[in-house]
Amino acid sequence: MTSRLHALCFDAHDPRRLARFWADFLRWETYEESSDGVTLLPGDETGFRLRFASVQEPKTGQNHMHFDLTSTSLDDQKQVVERALELGARHIDIGQRPEEGHVVLADPEGNEFCVIEPGNSFLADCGFIGALSGDGSQEAGYFWSRALGWPLVWDQDQETAIRSPHGGPKVTWGGPPLMPKTGKERLHFDLAPPAGGDQQAEVDRLLSLGATRVDIGQGDVDWVVLADPDGHEFCVLTPR
Image (cartoon, rainbow, N blue to C red; front, side, top):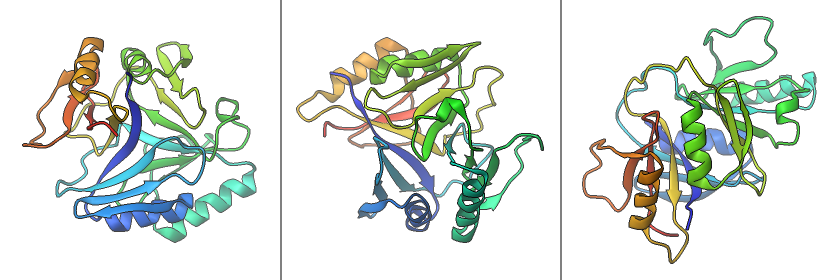
């Protein structure tokens, strides 16, 4: 049986602080805190958790995934940006042009996100988290559509997007040229087979779809680390 997207995991130097920023900004609640991180449970229609795991490695380069957050008016967009800045975000320049209407920010650990201008038709029926926007190939989009069982909602000019049949954010891949990979990703997906499912059978299925096994120094753990066709790591957890 197909796994579900259990969580989007952030590598963090200070998981508690970073989780607090996103909890306050998204108005989500803290779900679970343990020795190795913090998990936030969505307070809206977003169908996956946010997990913040403790790491020592520094951030190198731009993340290959980031949130596109929606706004309902120019005044609302301004207020969203101001709230983010008050909570610890900052403006950053990743090459956006002055005529583009979105605002690019980074959270307290430098993870990029965008506040999109009102009237964006692609995100019109999405919630505040309109999309998880990814740097990736058409092949990766096809892989994740099959891996999660989510239909393609966009497939044009090598740009792809998928969305859960239950709604929530879109997940997009922008097509070539792709950014160079600069090390282990700071953001990755955690997949989980349903309760009563078979982790090894799910790993085998994902490998048959084009995933590969990778070693990121995880050691003896109860999850399995794989990479999608673009080499971006993700984890297959035990059933839950």
